[in-house]
Image (cartoon, rainbow, N blue to C red; front, side, top):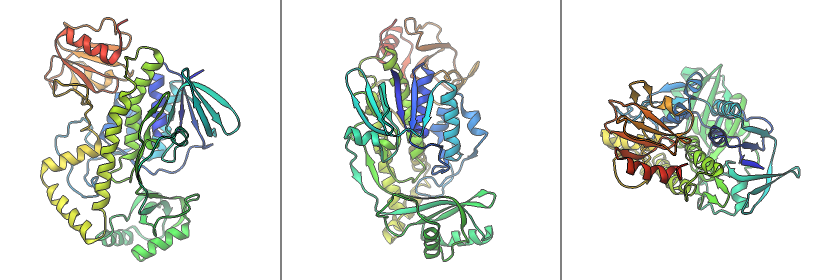
Length: 474
């Protein structure tokens, strides 16, 4: 029997597979596509996702293929300076195409022993008290202890489970493409500058080699989305919105996206769970979708592994829904707000102007950027120290960096007292005797995802929290 079947080889599914393998859990990733997609709908990692890569020792690989930008414009495209002193060691956006992110995560997961099977299409599933049976298009049946649907907004897993997906259907659509152009960069820049005075859903971005990423409002909502838009459709929309089609030709790919906003009613149904776009869809404003999915996987991976490995305390796996569902709901709300601010009508422009003025206040700017980058996320892990529930930023220790100690995906007690112990939990929690001038607390207990679940110096309190999050002492 397979430990966990992951359906979908996008960033969410691949991140999850890597997290499971770090804990020694078997993971088989199934994807309907015979080959990796060439599309890169998402183009960057926000600060929290960059932290995630750093916590697992992957960041140098990503930095080698990306470019760091500490710029504004991520909330509804309102261009304001990046706030100073954000609570992260990675106060930037890492620009990196989604296809590269997927390749690096696939290499990571398979390097740890995950099995990636492409061209395998899920058509049915059933579950009982011992496991899940996955039925594939070719008649194959696979048996696993758990199954996780990371198969996108039209998730087959979610539909087979009958999980409700309430929200709003798409009201507007936008065309997105990577194409070559004949227009000069200067001519394109002049047109974009003029059009964006009134149309914020329009723009171009040079990708090198004469290739541009082009975004333009579609003509209404397509009734049939079974196929991609055509090059002629893209040309027509560019001429209608910008007065020129820039001579677009030789498309790498053309796609469309809408502003549908939906959230799954539950993330867990017995032994089957949902993550990423299978659990939530929303407009791409703020560039949060890919990041939200990666962070779902980072929250779920260690909890599901604990369940498979037999040490999970009661209710641990249910905290995945309890913690991540509200985070997704908040993202859906901020994308609804951003969509309203991107409206070209007078009311939308007036609201946009007002929010722009408010963002000149540092507190407002900081608050909105922390929302977009997810460094402001705080889980409900109980009352106590102000650090509880927050992920801990990377801090310098006397002997290195905090995130350098977290590559194995285990819990961590950072202890500068030398008086505490994790005896009984040492198979799942590392004890590091070190301290930091950046952290004014005797000791902190971190989950494998880096969120603080205890801070203090009393051994009895520490044991209570170890028991709550890491199960019974061995």
